[in-house]
Image (cartoon, rainbow, N blue to C red; front, top):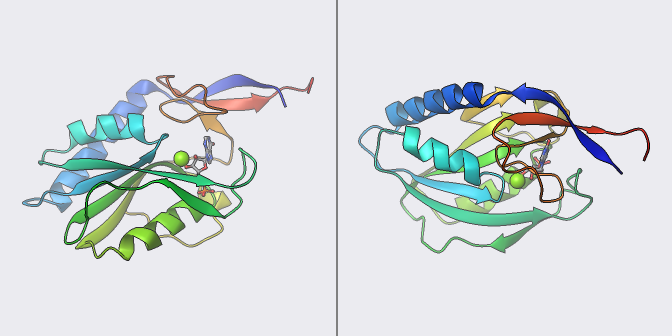
Length: 178
Ligand code: IMP
Ligand code: MG
């Protein structure tokens, strides 16, 4: 199916302002502690790079890779770990950082997986939340923006591996000729 870039949903300035607020909120909530941010590859990399610089605490960050079986635009619900953490999170204040929650299945899996490793606390910070598409209930501690169900790209989010480097977040539209 052919696609083209559509309208800008969230500008780089809006993203920067909101990321700053999220960093301040995390800084307040974790004052005196040193949380470990666990970013989900690859989509959350850009967001995490900005977020860690907005948190006025000493934080660590690590990466985890997950992939879901099924077509690219739809999560099947079967999630697989493709790259694990290289450190123990036992006793740590862990914050999972994700680019977007759609059905919620990816984060549901990740949360359960990390919880078995006995962190001191486990929270979730997502940049974008497609609330209307949720299929599994999930507590989300920090949300950047609640967005409609459109497929979006940019600021780390991809379609077929492309568009991650766009500075704004745009809607990806299907073109009629496909
Ligand atoms: P979930 O398991 O349905 O919540 O799917 C979340 C994952 O699907 C995200 O980590 C993204 O990789 C991908 N995804 C969902 N919606 C979008 C989108 O609009 N643009 C890019 N990737 C998306
Ligand atoms: Mg992702």
